[in-house]
Structures are given as structure tokens and as C-alpha cells.
Image (cartoon, rainbow, N blue to C red; front, side):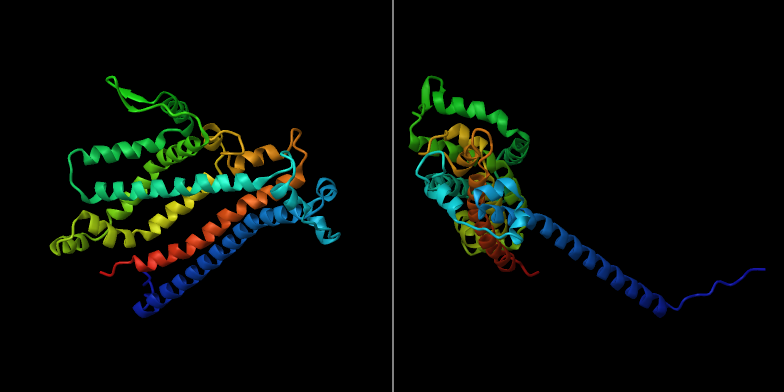
Length: 319
């Protein structure tokens, strides 16, 4: 004897799936919100502690934790005055290094973005022999460790480039102006493979109808790139600009090797590495200097984030 299995009406089944989907969506939304809050707190607390420590007197920093400032508030601006306008070389004097960081970072961001955008457009929309192999080679360059390229680059700058007895580029004299150019060249070379790869994937997904319509109207590649492609790839350019700026601004290895440690060309990171003192006990200067160094990246990130969202909205294509 068989027992008939009760059937659920189609409408009730659909309603149950809809309710379950809504519950799952709410749970996922709440979980994502909770995780985001936890990550934000874990990310913000050390930065807040750094700010509090930079405003405390030297004896308080070296004897108690930053959280004790709420029970015994003692704040001063002497740490910032010392690191920014210190009278001795050991006390700080971050102003000149701050300017050096700007002189290194801004060109090191603009050059790779400009070259990568042009190269990505050519690889995506211009047919020429060997295009696919060139793209594979650029993609493969991403796996080359940064440290392996430092010695060849130093030799490249010191001896120049000579092919079949013809000097294509003479050796560089290590004067201050050329040290800046060396750092720009190094950061541009290291950033191009990833930037070209990312922009190529973005540009190659643009609708081909836009390109065809522009060609029918008589537009060439320069005009297509300037009037159509650039407005549509604004989100990708903003993302690369943010990442490259943060990377170059926080870089110590490349700047120390190619720019040196002098106050004429050394960036802010080099001075921060020296500011802790020979025994690492100058915490009051290090906290103030570290907070000064993160102000500009925060400003750049928040500013470009607005343009990033605007570029997403302006660059959307309706089908």
C-alpha cells in the first residue's frame, strides 16, 4: 500500500522560496555590514592611537600607553614642531623630505598611467603583427621580482646603452636632478606591466559599436582615444592612480637605492627610517613623523574616490 505524498501548491512553493530568499539576503546583508564594521574598527584604532601618541609629551609616550590619555589628558604640539621645523638634523626637518616625496611621487604616477593607457588602447584596438605575443610578454613581466631589476637598472644608469658601437644613451652623472629622473624611470618601469594589463582588460571590453561609429564619422585613433576611450576608462585610471600613489609614497627601497639618503633627493620614508634614533627610542618623533606621512595618502585616496564613483556613473554604457 503506497502513501500519497502531499503536494505543495505552486503558488505556496514560490512564496516560500521568495521568503527564504529574502531572509538569506537580509542575513547576508547583516553579515556583510557586521564584518565591514569590524574591519573598519580594526583599521581605525591603530591610526587613532598613532594620532593620540603623536600629541602626547615624550615622558608620557615612553611610560604609558596611548589609551591612558583619556584618564590623564596631556597633549602638546612640540612633537610636530620638532619633526617639521627642528633646528638639528637629528630632530626631524621633514619639510624638505616632504617636498622630495611630492617631487618623486607625482611624476611616478602620471608617467605610467599615460604610457599604460596608450599601450593598452593599441593592444586592444589596433591590429599589428606580433600584438598577442607583445601582450603576453607584458603580462609575463608582472612575475619579475622588483629586487631582481635593481642591479640591472643601476648598471643601465651608470654605463649607459651601447649597441654595435653606437651609444643610444650615455651614462648618467649622479647629480641630484638625474637622481629624481632615475626614480621616475624605475617606478614607471615597475608599474607599467600591471597598469597595461589592467587597462587592456578594461578597454578591450568597451563596445565595438562605439569604435565603428566613430570610424564611420571619420575619427582616427587619436580622436577615438581622446574623446571616447578616456572618458570611459576614468574608473580604471583612478584606481591605478590610487594604487600607484600609495605604492610610490610609501616606498623605501627604490627611493633609497636610486635617490640616495641625502636631504636634497631623499623622500619622507628615508627620513622616517632614520628618525627612530640609533637605539629606536625616539618614539615621540617617530609617531609625529609617521602621522605626517599618512596625511597626504589619505587626502589623495578620499579625493580620487569621489572621481572614481563619478567615473563609474559617467562611463557606463547603456545597451
